[in-house]
Image 1 (cartoon, helix red, strand yellow):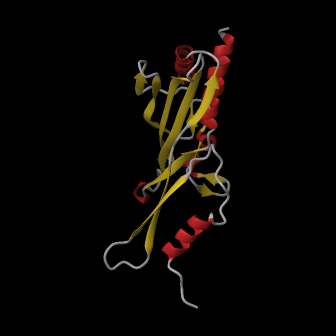
Image 2: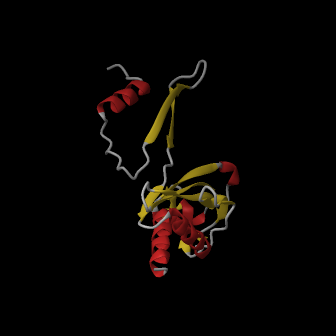
Image 3: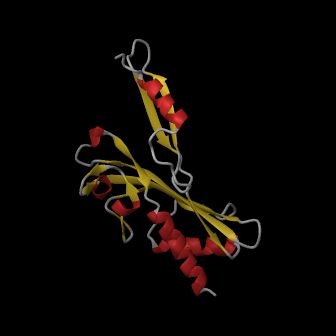
Length: 188
């Protein structure tokens, strides 16, 4: 039996839908690129990255009211702002460093940085997170809040081992939307 090159298997899998489960609309679709390993290399390198599209929530009130509540939500969650653009209704932090907790929230519930059974890396790694929210009109009288959470982590005991990517579990995005909704209802 002749071995089949990995690229052929990947291409066939992508063309036929493979055996992988379909991604849900909320889950980012993976982007797969293949490239040879360079001159004289044997095999194929595959880089898999994930698009970070964010989580959206709709509100029956205008964008300015949602943005004001969002600012209070970030303060309540102890997320310091490194980005605050009222004209674009965007705020967040582009490089928040944390370990184990973000405010009162456990990081292992917010991001997935890999790990072993019972020992997620987000629990012990030093994390650098990007947390950015923006508010826009829904085209009518309401607003849409979009929040993106992404990051990386590094093992403080073996810093030379490099960073690992930390993908969102959507828990923080959902907590932000829920808190904004609660604040808007309390203002009525």
